[in-house]
Image 1 (cartoon, one colour):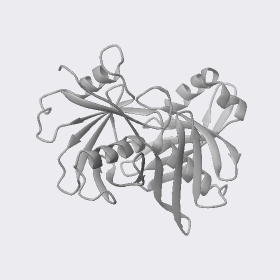
Image 2 (cartoon, helix red, strand yellow):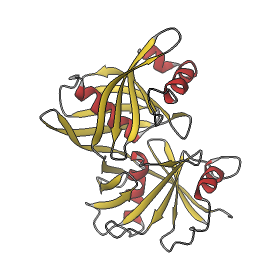
Image 3 (cartoon, one colour):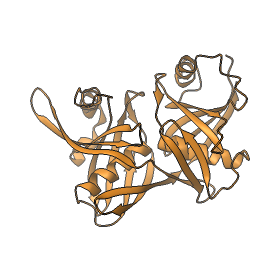
Image 4 (cartoon, one colour):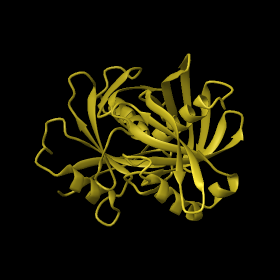
Length: 274
């Protein structure tokens, strides 16, 4: 099986084509676990399987590193958009169409490395308190798309973001809290300037912090905009693997048309024996 490894701001993926349905007899969940584990495969945060789609350039099946099927992945879709352009799968680099489990995703090339996608609009935005043994954590809960990608966003101190080992147990508890019935990707953030934050996401399916999370950036922008804490319509998010940007539009109280922009990188191409 041929694969291409890519990353978007450090968020890493293995992409493989199944445009002729040759992998339909394989257990893709098991395959994802084998490929994404560094001891049994090339290692990555997730596996993206390219399929044919009647209404798009390609279909995107996204599997987390633990083998669970994800609704969509923002940085993964940006990497896939670049892959489609460079492999001649996209009819128009200015309007790349990707069919995901969470709906149609539109992407475009900004430059050789910079790619942008339109994230799914939020279908849920609400406040949820998560009770712990010694305190309560206030979170904004956001689902992007329908079925939605679940995210919990909470603000922490700059010192907390400096010590991920100390923050990891809290990420694990929040990710599995019954307050979030589907589980949640948990983004911790702190402001470092007007409309600019530092952030890190504990990702569901990876079960640890990743170097970047595209939908986590989108959920962060939605959370802050809904709370009236944005001065403009673009949020800059500095994550451990790089800087991402989320622009959005308001229609009254509604937040929509989220555009995620950032770097992509081709790492390697190789073969994996099934």
